[in-house]
View 1 (cartoon, rainbow, N blue to C red):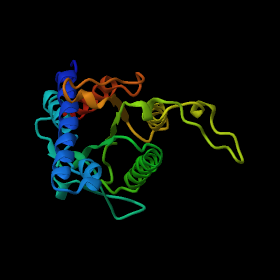
View 2: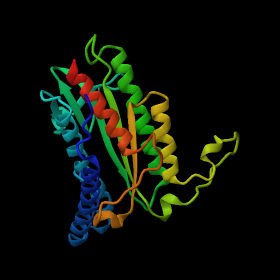
View 3: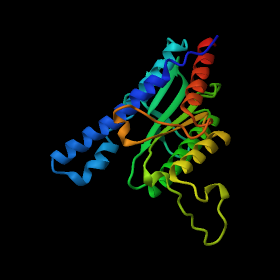
View 4: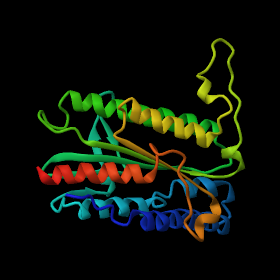
Length: 245
């Protein structure tokens, strides 16, 4: 059976427009209320900025035959047990007949500060995956449960601060040469590639998009492995395989 990618290109374009539009609206609201210092953070933490991608995944589930899936998007049903901590709240869970089919995270980073935020995102994404797979190994999701799909989608603002080469500090040992001269967006691409290559995530997607994309939803991928097409194709394949069982 062929996979149905649910017109993901058009859905992604609308999701990007929604992302930037929601940020603009949140920032304007903060400025109007006089709380300008909190504006950027308010836009980041609004919680709805990436809902367009949630809708895209819902379409993939429906298009590939998993008609009896339980798609969890509300806060109270997004919690899974961990191994190193009691629980972890994900951005989206796909369940079927009590089985975990997929756990997904949708994250973003917008300037002007990329350095510390990149490190925080890196630590978070690695730690969450290690915690989930250890919990899975220990039977937290059922003794004989099939391996779920673990996905991470990252949208990064494409601007001067994220695309210029970044220096590295090497006071004691040499860093991996791949990081020398890499911009923050390129660092994210390296991170996403290695998360998949090392088996921490089933698939990852990295999307670079400028603020002006609020009008047209434009975005680009940095590599085939971390492209949105690869991400949706692998997720659709996983969904179809589960539906066929």
